[in-house]
Image (cartoon, rainbow, N blue to C red; front, side, top):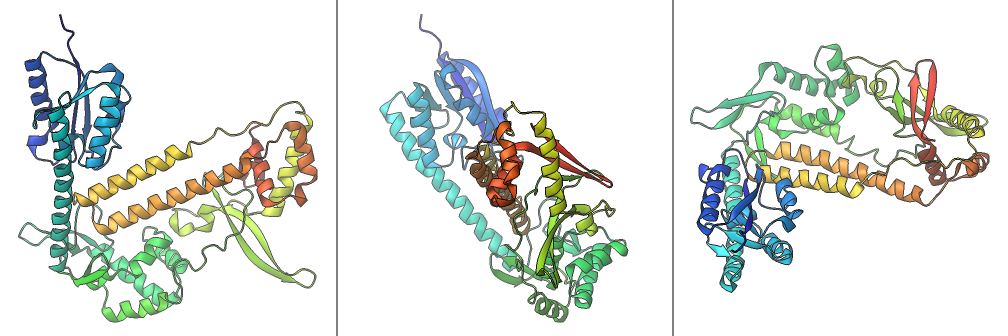
Length: 463
């Protein structure tokens, strides 16, 4: 008696609001019926709910690929449930399924890779699946532009720009309507900037007046957003919107002239190397410590810079409910204490090897961020995110990638320096003559973190 084929059923839909014809339940019902007619045994179900078919980064699909040795057949309801990309479809079939002696079957198209005709038809239909996706995207973009040209800003989800709330034009279209309370905050931000020419002073003033805190970048975005003039944006074009303006064109122009004196990123790249950056935490509020420098001048040294560390909740009090008053620590003081405490520690540990922190899988971390970026783009294409929200979230993911790459490069530099306990003493004696990379390598190898208390500084080691 011929052994029953073991079948893995894969189903997918991209959004929770998708048409019922593509629901997980209907896909499984059709596939189970086909397996029953062929006398095949369904041994496992794999379902990706609310995942786009534009890429292969789907948890259940990856789970299926890791277990192909357990099955004889992989079945889908429709070819586009597997993928909407011709390249990905053929990669899955040829480089994964067939390479592992697993047949592929699509119910709707009656395709079966055990036949030459089935293989040929899969290649043809994959082309049409990709064409369909490209056509849908083109139509959606065209519809978005027409809507914006008519004055409608894309309004989706619960995220609303400060000063507005979601409303309706009476014809079933979502529009922006002025939020009386939040719009006063927007007007106040513009008035304060004309008064102080400083976003930091705006933060302090808003806090004193009882408004909830706003980050520096958020306030600057508000000050430069033409939405408050009653305009809507599509890519690099602006159109007259149907929503009411909050700021007059005269005041907006005055503020833009002032902002031009302080362009974004004017101080970028000026931060110096900070030996203990990322290691220092506040014992009062738990926030991390930030580094900053200020210039001094005297007759002996002339002009020179002093580096210090202070709690983020003290550095940027307008972003917190309460300003942290923990102590400010000079970098020189911290270096002296680091060397002194490490020297004492090493005296009692002459035979051990300095253990490194557990290595971070940077490639996996970067991959996960790329997956999040793809998901954001898919949500935008599906009309579930507006352009402003998309850009804000993409900027956040970009910053996360930059931070990971910075840590990865730093670790790569430090990896080349192998330090043993018996050699640490040598590094301590020549610390002053070491370059920054060598010093940072030593810190990375021996230090877990530094906790700053109001009257104490605590070093926690990993050796």
